[in-house]
Image 1 (cartoon, rainbow, N blue to C red):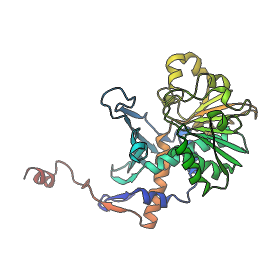
Image 2: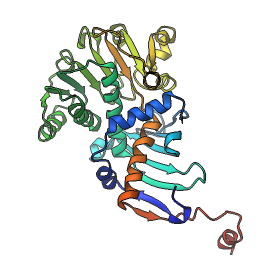
Image 3: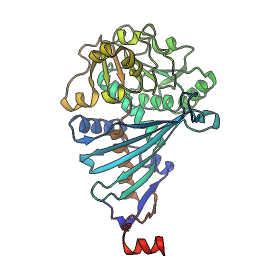
Length: 354
């Protein structure tokens, strides 16, 4: 670990993008999940602060902020991501999800690195979805359906093309103009055919893999929209995008973290109203599945619903890669918070009181 006298490394978003350009994100996340499932990582529950994200309650900022701490023994690193959803940002030309990540030496408390976490959040979320699809979805998907053409929709399309190379990726968004712009942009870089869907059903019904990444607060995905047998649905939004009928559609239901799934995301509403029905339907947590080498899909005809809420260990694993690559290449800049000074030392008191 770096010495406190070396200061703290600062990595801006452009640094992070360059440092992780050639990284196997899905493999990195898989390793972090195995660590978590094997109880070699610590991840307390997210701390959530609502700032009026329902658009009604005080204080009317239409946003939320989460604090996400974690530790991975294999990396000998602790970290904290501060991330929020700022739902009015679309009108400002800014991302809806913005985050920062702090890496901390678990022995000394030294702040090793402060880095932008917006890019990491966007792509690690998509990587978590692809990891679920890899282990729980069909083996050779020909068509991928994506609901939502925002940042998450785009990153899901990018990684779906990289991991599965499907013949077609079909995207639907209620904002047709935004959807067309996303499809045009993606078509310039991806080999798969990228198409605009005119409805939810058009994007999903014939798709082997379906990823929903929206900020919808009213369920809009019905069982009838999905492939009848052998389907795979992954809902990554913070809200309940799927109708109750999807639970009946699913033969198996997996989450990344059951504790988080109870309180936010696709299952939260069902847990609040039908807990006795939902709880027995959860087939397991993906990290434990991977750590124990258990097969999630026991038949190619099964319909699988995967609900990842996002785990801090994923952010820490990817951030650690960026940090170590930065140390190797000399990327970033350094600053000093004077963390080595004891608050009650003579020097500190003289500076404060003198």
